[in-house]
Image (cartoon, rainbow, N blue to C red; front, top):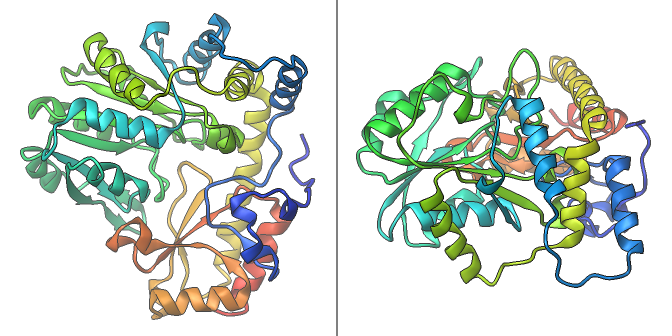
Length: 379
């Protein structure tokens, strides 16, 4: 796979490459979508499915679930069971269904900021109390405020974990996850774990699903997954949750079916199966390419004053600290607009994200280089 090859994305109707950007020669690096074609095995599977020419309601074949089981056992050492898996149309719908399944209206849900902004509305839309738990940031990355976290657990019914974390790029360590489980068990707070970026963790870090920790949990955990970030499949609306507790799983399915969701998208199913059954080589190559982009970004930012890169342990999202420039967020955005580079304002991830910008680096290296050259001319 040659990740340096590029197609003209301006005519694809991709949200990331909307005319509001492309008509003005803006390099879009804001939304968390990659600029690469998906794995050939996925494209091939979709073409085979399209040629079947029959797109009625379909049962999901056993081999689809087997592909998930094998991927997570081989890549992440987690032995799931088939009946734990619940297909869904996306991770955010999965999270919202989980919130309704493990909490009641008026109860508290802890969200750590900076946070992927749909987390906020996922809590408040369903009349739950949003409890903000700010992460502590430093030049070494972000960490938990354990004292505040434990205090807030006494007022919460659920904790919305992002593992790995978007936007700050942390891959939570075994000791951190163990402490999360122990504290949530102590206060009987359910965990909803958004693990959509689990395949995009860079050595020496690793993704740690809670079930492989050397500890036990007596609280419910709902795990939310999708191949959409890993393989560039966001437009196919395919995802799944993993719910080991059969009682909670039944309740979750009831919430899911109440929305009218039953059969799903057969193209999304075909893509998911192909990704997990045949995507290993492509994924490994993709991560090497992303690692090179991280090296480029790290080096180039040393030449630009006032912008600090927070350590990227996971995801293809760079969390850039502009506070040393002395400029307000609006002033930073204005300069980026002058440079014709579109990033995502940090304040949308919570007030403690103000002063930061999120950059998507899942793009061709020469595109990243050009964007950094443009940025260097205005800072």
